Length: 340
Image (cartoon, rainbow, N blue to C red; front, side, top):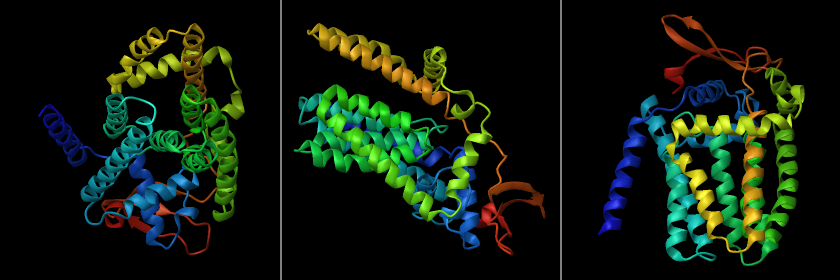
């Protein structure tokens, strides 16, 4: 009876979130670029949205699931995102049941699925969120396989895609590798090697498929004044950035406030001093990786030599989006509402 009540309440919260929450402006910008490009026959591979190749295609494919008014299409997008979270949570639950008691695996899978599904609108469907989703899926796949090598090879696909979501999301993939390392060192090392190979292959495919992708890859770090390529790594700032970021995220997702207590509980349950030290080192390493990601991930701006889809001044009484292709006669005005 208690499970039924919890399930009904959780379902009601998810339905309310899908039907009432709106997508963040960043997501709407990317959708407007993709829809405007589609309206004039431009592939997502050739539409600049300040997002890498695979993320553009991910959002484009989700957007094809809905039709009708903008509000309906946004609700369909959010619903699809929630379904992806539930599927990933079930995959993680199935993988953990091979290593943990059933109740603990159920709680872990449900918690991860709900944290992703109920993420703040500033995060939901963003590249970082998508990378986290793919990283959880990779962890589930690599831990679920009977043999380490095939499991690592299969898990390298979602983990490589996680890296490709924004490039700086390599930090998210690295945190997933740390989680796997805590459970199985051999699988973690195999997954790291396989992910390195899959990331190179996926990047090469994106550069081959998108005629301007390499230009955009070079331009995007130049847009960001604080990018890693300009400022380099500053080890002294990593921990500070991590603490600031966690504090900022905790305001939007209070569940993060439980992280210190969860870590202390985990360390207290470890009878082996060596194992306790390993967990503490992994936690510090995760915080350092998070701080490195914060020092590199902000890459928004307007300077680029590439063709682009950008906001233009209102015209004829309504907002307009313009899709640029770099080819003669390839631009026209398309309404955000009509493109929707």
